[in-house]
Amino acid sequence: MHVIRAHAGAWLHASIVFVVLAGCGRKPVHRPGEEWLNKIEIEGNKSIRAKHLRAGLALRQVQKQGGAPDPYLVVVDGQRIKGQYLRRGFLEVDVRSRVERHGDATSVFYTVQEGPRAKTRVLITGIPASEKELLAEIRDTLPLEDGEYFNYEPYDEAKEKLLGVVEDAGYAKAELNAHVIVDRVNHEAVVHLKYELGPKCTFGDIAVLGIDEELERAVRARIAFKPGEVYSSAKIAETQRNLYDMRRFSTVRVLPDKKDGSVSVVGVRISLARSAQNELSLGAGVGMDPITYEVRGRTGYTILAWPAPLMDFNIDLRPAYAMLRDENTFEPRIRAMAKLRRIDLFRPFITGEVEGGYNYLTVEAYTSYGPRARLGIETPVVYRQLRVRAGWEIESLDFRNISPLIDPALQMQLGLDGTQRIGQYSQAVTLDLRDNPIEPRLGVYAELRVDEGTPYAGGNLSFYRLTPELRTYLPIPRTSMVFAARARHGNIWGDVPVTERYFSGGATTQRGFPERRLAPTLIGFDDGDMKEVPIGGASLFESNFELRSRLTSVKGMGLGGVAFLDGADVVNQGQSIDYMNLNWAVGIGLRLFTIVGPVRADVGYRLNRTGPGNPDAGSHYAFHLSIGEAF
Image (cartoon, rainbow, N blue to C red; front, side, top):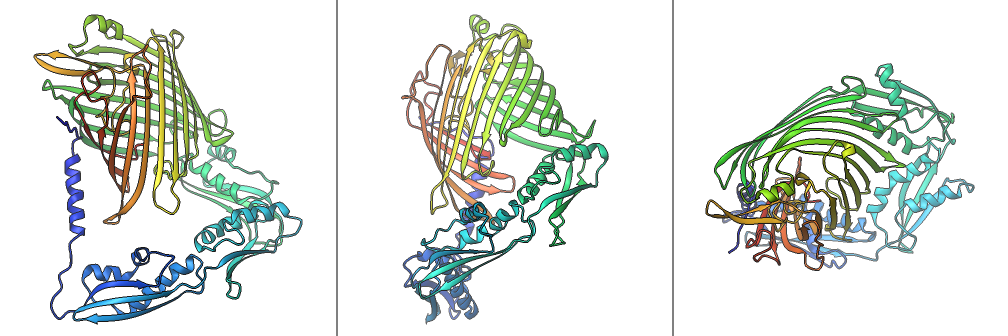
């Protein structure tokens, strides 16, 4: 028997999407005697497919609405088709149009004579012969090689970078006149980069405006250049990023003074406007997981630059009220935390945090409650993309509502028979080379986390945990698709804290399982009913493979599709993961790209290990609805 598990609101969301898509597919009604556009045909095209040429035409909208072709749009769309060829280097292309009418139905035909595709030749002038390295860097920045087919897109995208290269070499007042010359005899596109460099410059005086003296010291410590250094536009941009990262300013303007073209010293004025100090966020929602229905809220309050200019204070309160589905009983869930954060601790870019709070949480096997405290520090190392975190945390937990399937001997083994105090030191190293952390298309993300539980940290358990993770993203050439992959491993040695055990399954791990259901599980009878209670394991492996693609748009929002393959397993202490026999699931999903991020719906189907003795036995499907990519 197949079991489908869904988060609350999932079917409502799917229904809304279905209605929207159904509405978009409605055909127009044609009245007798009224002219209407029947089809748009493109002839003679060989290098660009007709569907790609038609996609950007204004007449496509006229056709969808059932209207007649406007003669002006017929001409304009012909220019659009020609423009697509020109952008790809067909500089001698010719496009002609004709209109044919059969009764009320009208057809528009475009005849394309492509001509030869131009090849690239690059000509750079205005760079002194002594600047050989600069000339080589300019050539490397333009992604068009001599003799290859010309394409306007990489040429247009490189223009700003081509000017930035000479500015970074100290030519602050340089100008670039970039243009393409068509050589019809040789069928070439001559890319002429004509520079006027001006004097080689250095940074001059730096003026900081709009803030008090105490904050100015921190601002100046984040400036990426000093007076007397060779001028660089990249240093200007880096300084602006550094100051915005302080979260103290609504506006940051780093303005070099280039007015006097004959002067080789460039002064810089930094104008800052303070942002609002108080931030209040409110939220609420409903949810459903394998054991509960839940109503939850969230309140966040942040005071920036308090109690000192470089400190922030934050309160995060997450109350919830859950009904246990199997027992029809109600449990509160509370997470209350207060955090004090200090930026530029000891030196720029080092962040320190002090956090304290209280948790009251119900899971399948028990309810845990108690206070928690944490100290942490984070800093970049050498590069902004490489970061190191270190910290200490301690948590004191008591337990109640322990599942009847956990007998006294197992309660003692798991540490549920008394107060469990977890004190640990944590360290992590992350390397983030993704082009976009929210919707990455290219790059790599790697993390290595190490935790040591020890009495020296204030706990009553001794353990060691190692959790490495690697993600990679690769766009597929000439398509909108991206291949994404992720692998995560984890292992705990020593006294395994019951609240630190590994679980898999859910929207961001193994999508063939509901949340937390891929884990060592107790199975037995409770009040005459067969129940399963996952208790977690000491060793974990997860792997995910995705092929992501943009499909279309709905009401101005992008709609994407995903095909995925997930493999994972979690085992008890002393057992080894069988990498040749992981729990595998395949699936598909949709992504609706909204202003708050991708709204994601995934359906996973388990391929193996669904029989008795396996986690979540008998379940084949799982449905997930969430916000954000899986990884």
